[in-house]
Length: 208
Image (cartoon, rainbow, N blue to C red; front, side, top):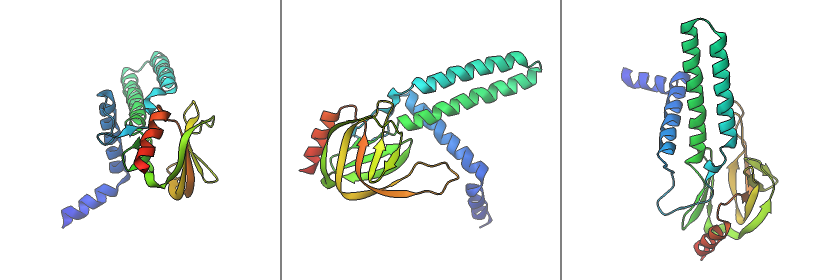
């Protein structure tokens, strides 16, 4: 009994939750390095989000320069070692967040389209609720934005595929962890598809 109480207390402790989150991130990084993508077998990946690595690489280079500068400024060997290890660990965790985003893309099965971003499930669209889909070029590069009843899932290249639904789906707004979660119902989804023609063909077959 006492052990169960202890386990429950530890499970809700912020430090333990942070440790579990970081272990999951590191696990995602290992999966990404090995080339694993977490989608069901036979599913069509909507967009391989690992293409956009320019900014993460630039941030990593800037961090490396900062580490070298700090190391040159400090004279205490122990302090230099501690700061070096913390800095390197910070870069690793940063890339683990990138990996989390890359290995969980949106995907399409024979029955539904699953929208994901950064490891977060945004919504599931049954294919029989899609009344129209096709190539529509947009230049909204919002990572995730909701305008009226449209969800925009853009990349740096914008969007190139639009879905119109006859049944609204509920999706979460993007937020910081300290903000309360807000939700909206949308009837349109604009996103970036690597192969828009193939995506449309699969969706049309799924509606039949």
